Image 1: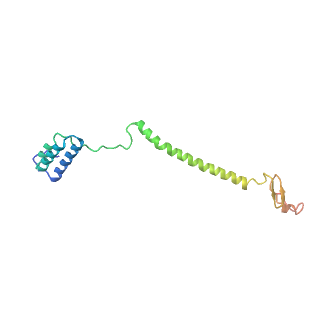
Image 2: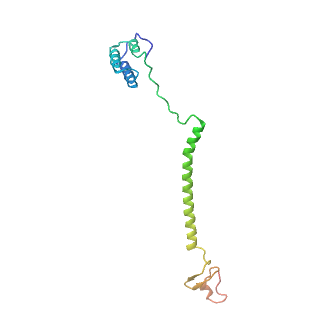
Image 3: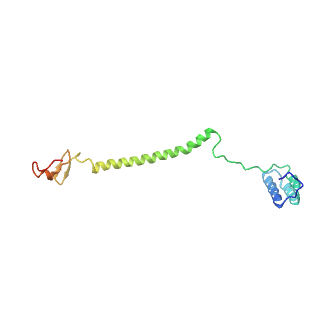
Amino acid sequence: MPKTGHLRASDADRDQVAERLRTAATEGRIGFDELEDRLGATLAARTYGELEAVVADLPGPQPARRRTALPASPVARVALVLAIAVPLVAAAVVAVTAFLSAWIVWVVLGWYVFGHHGRHRRYSRYGYRGYGPRRDYRQAEAGPGRGSWT
């Protein structure tokens, strides 16, 4: 409130003082009988000086406490960063490991099923084929010098 006690108070000023009195009563600073007396004096007050006299023995309104974005101590900051970073890094490692292992399994199975021709014995439409490079049997049947072994 302004320091000029002789100026007239508005209804909004009286409402602020009444709310301050209600807060003081809920905090246990004044009793409910005293609250009624002070509210009556507040509603009858005409100047700022009369309103100041009603709440002179009560502490002023407390400013809202600001919350800091990060804890104040460096140790707490490090702990907060680690609490956030460690799960993220662990999730990334698990995801990369799962992807690489799935990729490796896919490549190895694909190589085993579809690849490494000539590295194991198998039957083809031309009969049994053994170890060694792949050969074109149709050209080989053409006779010597007429086909090539590739």
